Length: 250
Image 1 (cartoon, rainbow, N blue to C red):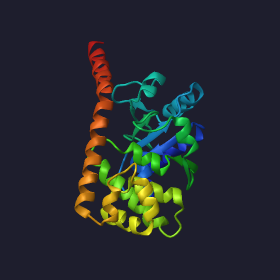
Image 2: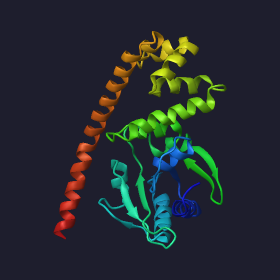
Image 3: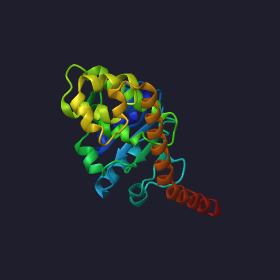
Image 4: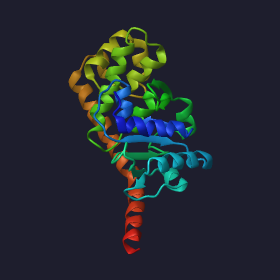
């Protein structure tokens, strides 16, 4: 069940005809990897028409910026998140975070093309980041995101284990973070596992059932992604500090 303030916010965005994709904690819940979240995280298109529709939805929600930066096309295209707080009676205090660009993810037009569509009661058809795109967007410096990636893929394996096609199995082999599942997949799909191992060498240890080596490889992957995310955000943090200084001087 989607909490009432979030339900109202999604309905407002849907009614505005804005192009948006649900991501973050609410998307994780809908993919079957439960996460408690009071916020709404959306990826949005940055063309002028869509931003007008997004702004219309925000105006209806009486959403005001709570942090820098301001909601502007160039800011979104650079990779920043814009944070707003809603103030209608039905959504009081609800935070809405908007992004258009995430590290390692394709442009919004591609994310939109690959989106997962889900039917929500009283709201209708809502787009989510596809599972592979959501997993990529979750590869951040934040400690809490890595257990969530693991749960997202575990849930997908459990749901589709008996009906998976080759692209889905390749996705599992590329992204699964659970040694036991990786070993099972290597046993069930040995040829695919050897192919994907060219891009993810730790899969070699899945075939030999070396749990310790698998775990070490997963830890190395996580460390590398966290460092890449840190470097990605360095110039963006400099932008934020600049905008904060400017705001204090006003």
